[in-house]
Length: 237
Image 1: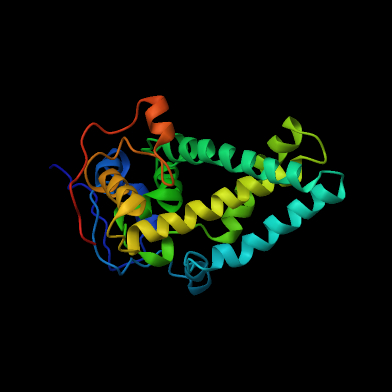
Image 2: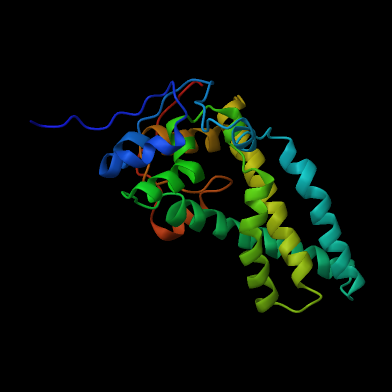
């Protein structure tokens, strides 16, 4: 007797179900459900609350940290011009991190129970429910965890006076990324660069999901050969 493949029940908490999909997870997670109501993640109400974040929480939490980091650099001897250049450098570094994280971590191939579960929490949920506005930006706690190795890298690659402003620039790049990402899914740009970015990102979700990893810019997709050859003409969401 042939057993039926596992099917996810969207009416039940979903996180601890997706691991059972095994190899079928990759196909399942890239078949988007286009509704603004996302599924419940956990049975526990507190855990469920931690998965939901309003977009405006990101600048509210992290912009003061950016200012604080830049102030530290000036207190350690950087001139305002030098601090500004360090911030710009950090933003540039972020654009590469944005691309690498999206391509190599967020789109990692998984098949094990815990691999699928981790990926769904990290990024798979966004591809499955791309219009879930409360699970689009990163919760501050998750961002803080990811910040630890990035801060260590910046300290190793720059001087004690430069590192805070450089890291602050990277953090400012992240804030821009998360707010831009939210806008591309829920805003309605009618022309200009915003419309180009929205079309470019929707192409990644609905047509060519293994290309187009840039969010705020397509520059690294051009550099590394992941710029999609064709794009959707228009998707109204």
